[in-house]
Structures are given as structure tokens and as C-alpha cells.
Image (cartoon, rainbow, N blue to C red):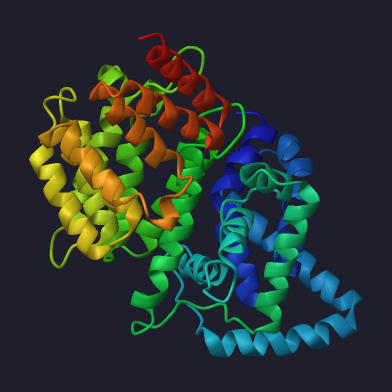
Length: 414
């Protein structure tokens, strides 16, 4: 591995840990980001010549701390303000114990997870800040992920940091009594990042594999930090089981390949095995959670030899459980699609028609496509064509639009 590539690999793995430790030490996110970047730049200069040190994370941490101290010595006013912030941070979170190697346990990353996903921040800012601080993406990379100009994203990140500073949002892990309320927000941020990677909201590609893989990496970190939280296991299992199909989801031209047409031999069996085990963990030892149930549904899809062999009665039963936990129209839509596979397209369409007045499904692309496909299966071609046209108007990525144009043409030619 070249020096530059070695630095990049370490940066991806160590960035969140390094940033979190510096935030806790100095109480200021901006300063922590600046000296983290300085440390990376120093590594890019030294490592290609001197070699990667035996403990690259410790090297980066030492370098970043020295640079932070140098900055504080040069700016006494900044140091005085930072001293107040640091006292507040110390009060909010006691120092973690040291591990066998003399380093710090990675609990500090948990503090950063919960700070980035704090409910006081706007929903759009939480994901952006998580990608910037925990995934280590640059501001231009985060802007590309959210399909907004770099300047817009820079302002959004600055706004989020300002909110953290002005609202005195603490850099700490919530107490046991707070965790049930706060953890779902963290999981939702990671799931939202993965969802954008699974099906890009716009652009030339159906999938953003870089985003999907970053979400999985963050979920793995969270799983290591909170091994007893079953919903964390459920989320990671769900992401792995869905991501296992990535190579079969698009054709040679990038067009979507539907589940019943996918070459299942291209599915990643290692991810399926790992994800299925996590689904079992998520559903064991207590009441089910939304991510654990979704992981179980994904496992049933992945373990079936083909679409017809899928245990549709069990899938519908799991959607019944999920609908009780999360009575949202999107869950009801997915349940209707499963009912259509179990009981036939007419039964599924009846359920979709019951959802027609739901405001959150108005103009919702998956709903329009599901309705068009069921009408097509029932031979109600003029209605199917109208539904495909409606779906085409709101389709996100270009591959989706190409796919819908072909579906519409097949209906109109019949």
C-alpha cells in the first residue's frame, strides 16, 4: 500500500475516534476538525518518507493535540473561551478508563454520534453532520451526497455547529434513562444515509454505493459500542441483508433489475449469513423493534431460492408486526405489496386504493410504481399507463426514468 493510500485507510478508520477525543478534550468542534485536518496533512508529508508508524492512530492523536495546544498558546482569548467550554464538557462526561494499550476506549465516538443526531438539530443537518464528523467525508463530498451546492452544505454544517454551541448541546452519551428516547434518532440518521445510497434521489446512477457502505461502517461502529442494544443489531443486519443484493440490482446499462428478475447467485452470501444472524439477535430476548423486524423480512427475501419460494405468509405476518410498531403509510404500502404476492394482485390493489388519500403517499414514487405494476398484472392497461406516467413525473434518478419509460411503452404497445 502506498503512503498516500495508507493515510487514507487510517483516516477512514480513525477520523471519528480522533475527532471525538479532541472534542471531548478541548470542547470545541471547529478546533477539533482543524487540528484533525492538520494532523492528516502532517501524516501525508511524513509517512510516505518515514513509513506508517506502528500505531498510526496514536501518532495522529499526539500530532493533533500538539497542534491544538500551539493554537491555544497563540490565541489567549480563544484559550480563555475554550477553558470554559472544556470545564462544561468535563462536567457533562466523565473521563473514560484507559484500555490495555494505554489508549482510550472508543466511547467518545458515542458522544459524537449522539451530538450529531441531537433532536435539537434540524433533521437535514443531522445526517450532514454525521457524514462530516463520523464518516470523515469532506464538505464537497457531503454536498454531493445530498445533491446540493458545496456552499449550501457548508452553510448547513456551520449552522449545525452554531446550534450545538449556542444551545450548549453536551458532548456526552445519554444516560440509561435517556437512551431509549435518543437512540432511535441516531439509528434513523444512519438508515437515512443508507437509503440514499440504496436508491439515489436523483442523478445518473440508481445506487450510491459509497454512501451505502459508509452507513454500514457507521452501523458497525455503533454495534461495537452498544453490543447489548438489539435495535442496533437489527439496523446493521437490515443494511447488510439489503446491501447483499447490490451487484444484482442493476443491469449492464445501469437500469434497475427487479427482485424477481435478479440473478440471486450474484448476491453476497457472506453478508446474508452475517445479516441473518444479526436479525436473530435483534429479535431475541425482548419485544421486537422496527429494525429487527425489517431485518427479518429482508432475511426471508434473501434466503429464498426465487420469488415464488419466498415465505409470503410469514412476510405478511412480519409486516403486521411492523405496522403495529410503526403505523406509517410506507409500512402499509410495503405490506400491501406483500399481500399482493400472497393473495394476488387484486387483494394488493384494494389495499393500495385504501391508502390513496394518504397525504404522505401523494406523489410518492414507490406507491405510484406499485399501483402501476398491479394494474398491469390485472390487465387494466389504460389505468396502468396513467399510473406509470404519474410515477415517471416524480422519478428520481435517470435509471429509474429509463426503466419506467420502458414499462410504459410495454403497456401502450399491448
